[in-house]
Length: 96
Image (cartoon, rainbow, N blue to C red; front, side):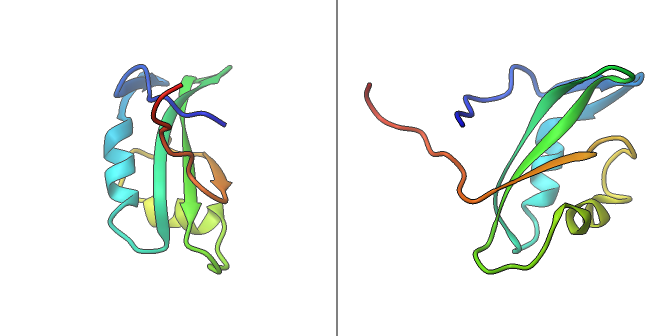
């Protein structure tokens, strides 16, 4: 996987503006998650929906439902529905 950055900070989902950086900031306020990135994803019904990519701390027995519960009431209701858990967040490589 290669994450090169989101093409935009705001997406419109079902008529509601969602700030991707805000989702990342909120997730970053608690220790279970090491790294996170929120990207726009296509959705047939809503147009776009955020996809949250998260690296959990090693040994943490948690899943996406735990993170969705954490986000409830902190971000727009439809702001995050898809969470991808990865073992390690890809880091930028220098040189090519």
